[in-house]
Image (cartoon, rainbow, N blue to C red; front, side, top):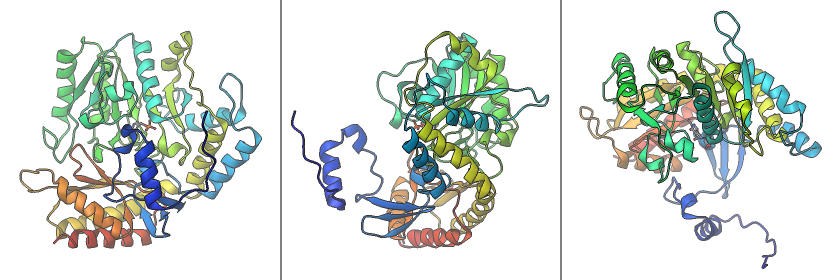
Amino acid sequence: MQQKAPQPIDWSTEGTAARREQFYAASQRKFVPFREPMVFRRGSMQYLWDAEGRKYTDLLGMNVCISVGHSHPKVVAAAMEQAQELTHCTTMFHHPIPAHFAEELAVTMPKGDKGDVEWVVHFTNSGSEAVDLAMAMARTYTGNVDLLALRSGYHGPTSGAQSITGIAGFRHPGMPGGVAFVPEPNQYRGIFGAGTGPYLDEIERTIQSATLGKVAGMFVESVQGYGGIVEMPPGYMTGAAERARAAGGLYIADEVQSGFGRTGDHMWGFEADGVIPDIVVMAKGIGNGFPLGAVVAQKHVAAPMAEKFMFHTYGANPTCCAAGRAVLSVMKEDRLQDNAKTVGAALLERLKDLQRKHRAIGDVRGRGLMLAIEMVKDHKTKEPDRETTAAVFEKCRDAGLVLSKSGPHQSVLRMVPPLCLSAADVEVVADGLDQAFSALI
Ligand SMILES: Cc1ncc(COP(=O)(O)O)c(C=O)c1O
């Protein structure tokens, strides 16, 4: 075996880009958002610094993974302490850290009118593993196979998660079938326009026409993330759950992006509609950058899974779970859900000001710190404006802002910053965006 002697890390942008180009598989190279490579060297709370020492306000939170702040000292300390003691402990053995964390997550779930809804947790390494497990759980519990999912929904890269992802650019050959898609209730450009009823009717029609008439369940992101920050309108989640259950299925909330207080009003996005899911899938913000996911399910729903072996090697890893526990306590101590609500509302107002000023902006939407600006070529036809979005995105980099191009047409600027974004940052962000749009004229 040939082995290269360890070299000092080459922090140069050119060196990093060249190594990545040569040694990363094509499948991992495509996702380069900016025209020129960007190397981040350091992060602290809502800020990032690149290899040249330039500071950025982070509106992407490394794809919503950074919930309480980059390298938050309490999260880092908790993980380090556990890693030094015992870095990994397989789930076949007992360990108190994941056991405590499971209890702490379970108590964040709704108990129902009678207070008798019991929740249990299965830890995974990632969101898509959690999605796959939720699919298996729903099919095992109900005995049905067909699943419903929303167009423009994103649920992850594993084969199962891809099969319920409703954006062609994320789907690859060979995914399992047994999934029927319904239109996303996008209040700005959905096929039935604004409202809830027609979208719910379509669920029923789809069950009757594209499934066996019985379903295992329906997956809904409480706020679609990569789909371009599409909120479920009032009554949709409740109505969807009713329809899925009437066809023998479960209601599965994907909270991978919208969970952990991000929407400001609630800990979980589904709470906005008062629905109680059968299964909740979570990841990303749960670990503030440590790889961790979880399926939180009603106890009776998870029970039939005891019949077979389901083992995620790093699920319930105590180092990641120690980080997760610290995330929950920092969220509480720093009142980050409240912060998401007030700072998010202030940012939304500033985005609306920008909409009045810049014609390219067709829609501004979202809640808490889950916000978006959508660009259109024409306000009547709402033709997506991918080019302007890309140009503004590049200019934002010059203005010291990192955000994301999202939506099925890449015509949405998505903002999902660490939940510690401040009122002062809102001014910086609004000015930066204003500069970016103004520079296009
Ligand atoms: C809503 C949603 N669900 C599931 C996933 C998959 O999570 P992971 O990338 O951790 O596998 C993602 C990832 O972006 C997501 O946004």
